[in-house]
Amino acid sequence: MRRLRARYQNGVLTPLEALPLPEGAEVVLHIEASLLPEDWREQVHFQCRQVTPISALFTWTMPLQGVGTPRVRLCQVLTWEAQGMHVLGSVVPPPGAVQVEMRVELPTRPEVSSQEFTLQFVDQEDTVQLAGRVVVLLPAVRVLLQDLPGQPPAEWNCQGSWGRLEDGTWTDSPSGDYPNNADFSLTSPLISLGGLESSVLTFQERHCLEDGADWCTLEVQGQDGPWQILARYTGTSDWKAQTLDLSDYDGTRVRLRFRLRSDRSVTRDGFYFRNLLLAAFPVC
Ligand SMILES: [Ca+2]
Image (tube, rainbow, N blue to C red; front, side, top):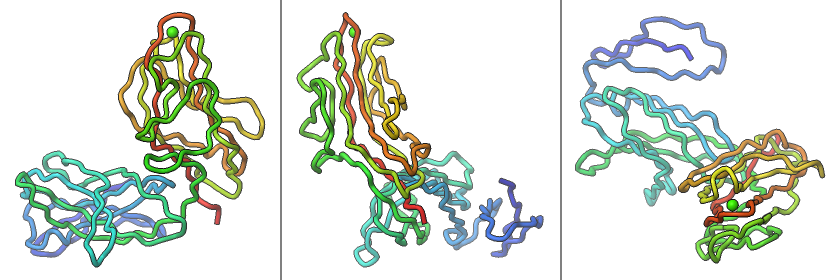
C-alpha cells in the first residue's frame, strides 16, 4: 500500500501529493501532525479489512502523540441504548504511533448485519475515553461445526479414551497420561461445505507429548479420499489459538479428526482442545 502524505495545520488537512486511485480503492490516511488539534479525536480514520468468517483486521489511524501511552481497546457495541461493550482486543501502541492495528475474533452471525465498533483509550489511571464509533456491514456466516464450553458437544465419534471435561475441554486421556501404543481418534460427523467459501477452522489447544515420539495430528478427509494432515503436535506447549484455512475444501464434504498416537515407551498427559468452530461464508 502506498502512503498518502498530508499536512495538518490550523484545523485543515492538506494532501501533499495526489495519487491516482481506482474506483472503490481503500485508503488509510496517515496523519503526520506536530501540533495536535483540539478535536483530534475526530481525526480518526478507520478501516475494517481481511474479514474472514471468524475474524477481521481493524486499522485506526490517528494522532496519538500527547496522550501519554494509552492502552487502546477495540470494543463491539452490543446495544446503542444500554451502551453495552464487548472488548474484542487491546494493544499498547509504540511511542509516536499513528496507527493501531488489531486482528480480532468476531462473533458469528447468521445474516448480513451492521455492527458497531468503538475504540477506547485507557490511560494509566484506568480512565476510559472514547475515540470514535464506526458501523461496519459484516457478511453472514454459516457455522458448520462448533464445540464450545457451556454448550452441548458436537457429535464426535470417539475411539480410545477421548473425553470431554466439565469445562468443555476435550482430551485424549481424561484420567491421566495416555498409554503406550495408543491410537486414539476423535472424528467429526460428515460436514457439507456445499455452497460455501472461505471455510476456516479455529480452536485452542495445549499439549504435553513425548517430544518427537508421540504425536497428535489434526486431519481432514475430503470426499471419501485419504486422510490429510492439517497440523501435527508433539513436545509441550501451553494454550495457543489455532486457525486453519480449509478453503481448499469449499464446495465438498469433509470429516475432521484428532488422532493421538504414541510409541512403546514414555507417556505424557496428552492433547487438549476447546472452543472449536468451523465456519464459512455462504456463496452469494
Ligand atoms: Ca511415548
